[in-house]
Length: 53
Image 1 (cartoon, rainbow, N blue to C red):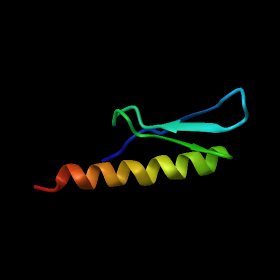
Image 2 (spheres, helix red, strand yellow):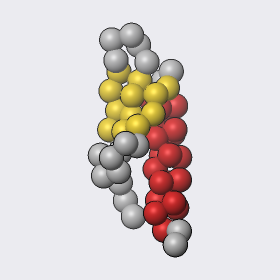
Image 3 (cartoon, helix red, strand yellow):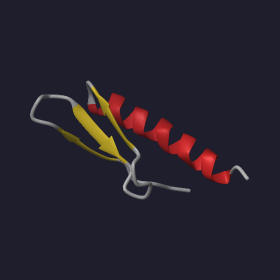
């Protein structure tokens, strides 16, 4: 499954990344790469949980 990770920098300087296809999957980081990596890891956890019976 492919999903999109959108990211933006907030006024305070931290980065927010989210996966629009998976509501509630968002993560913060000190850099865009960190925030996107955290969002990707969370998205994978959510997908695994959804596959469990």
